[in-house]
Image (cartoon, rainbow, N blue to C red; front, side, top):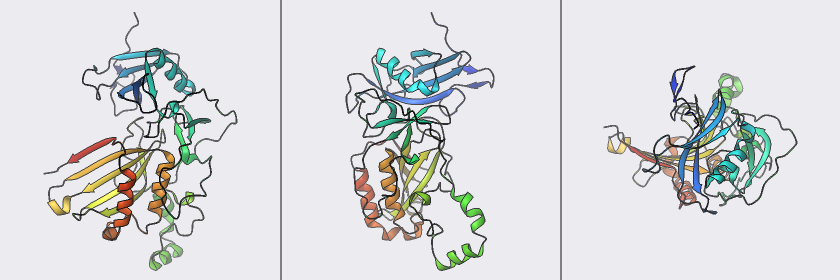
Length: 342
């Protein structure tokens, strides 16, 4: 009988639970092997990474199935290698009768010789966009852009389909992933220059002089930008763009695209603020999982709106709100919360 792994990290005296990166390595979704292109019966599991001794443990999380016991072990992998963990998990789960539902097991995912900060393998998403965002679509975005890269264990999107063949990893060595620059770092010095003051006086956005759409993409600064945890890997998600519109009741509704800094998973957030109208501090929030091409489509649409993140101009953006709602129609919701302050 195998000895159970300790529930606590004795080196740091911290427990094993979602919300920390101490021993929790990744959250993944599993489906029975009978599921095909549209997996049914998805269940959450945790992948725990141990270094002494080297091992990988997969256990049920239990939040999507009331009958599953929290922490119940599914399988163990001895002496795992982070760069090969995706294929090792696929093989081990297949032997246990389960299918890993992540980017690494999707037919649209092509492995690359890139690795995440955790040492996991990464690949390029080859999903095609499903809608036309109109003028300004990022045609200059190259096929090998790092914006299309996803971790092997990144959360699956609505376009996931089972991979029917074994794919070979590219042998050409690539440079490490270049992080997306942050707006605060770019603007900290520019705002005090004569050119920056003249640009603000003329009412021109600070990114108007950039040459390409991809260069204008930065991580936004502000409350919560880069502070919320990823749904999959416990890394931090950063905000890449936001569009503020008005609901039919006059409330502020913000559509924003987020990207995890660790596994590169994209999310779309639909946040409605009802504070001013109801005086109850009520907010409603939905999260959706997007593939990289879909996220780029949304960011391209946001890029066409001047001062898209400013709420003062929200009442004149009815067409943009209709486009967003049409884009999200029928898309599965990853998370839905309604909060009331008083």
